[in-house]
Image (cartoon, rainbow, N blue to C red):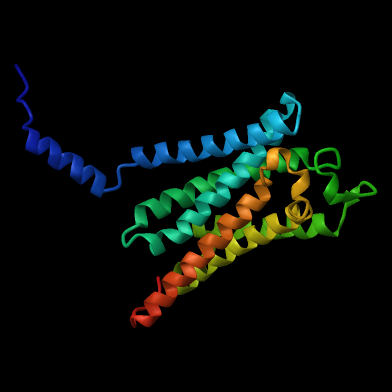
Length: 230
């Protein structure tokens, strides 16, 4: 039996419906493109210009790329309501991508956290003040992100929407503070940047600041119009 042919209009309607329901394929492609671009930047800066040996690519360089990509997606998740009226699907996908990437970053960091990889964080074989502060900020940010993503604490289920948004802002701000303490020393020495390319920590910090500014601007517009901020 020959199956009935589908009319072009029916196919177009299905495609539109799929997109309206949040077909994940375009978002997954976008996620892969962003990660690929960040990884390419890391390869150029650290391997080709700075001369980091290629055997440090699997953990050291991939760790940097996963961290920056995570910050980028968390920033997008926070800023989506400010740049689009209907960004719920994209916001959720970006938040999930950020959570996966930051989990990878955390696991790799635990494996390579030593004075050989991060001499600026250690003194006499132990973490210095900068190292302890930056790691504490990162741990708190990751904890809040996991709680928000999983709803692990029952009280969070009854939080108001505004309280949830404040926690998201807090998470991103903590991530920004984390990279600030990690990279501020190198930010102040642009003459030492390989190929004049800024450190990935500085790139992450700028992304965080832009996302927070977009969110505050969006909230200000909502309040000015008499609507409750998202």
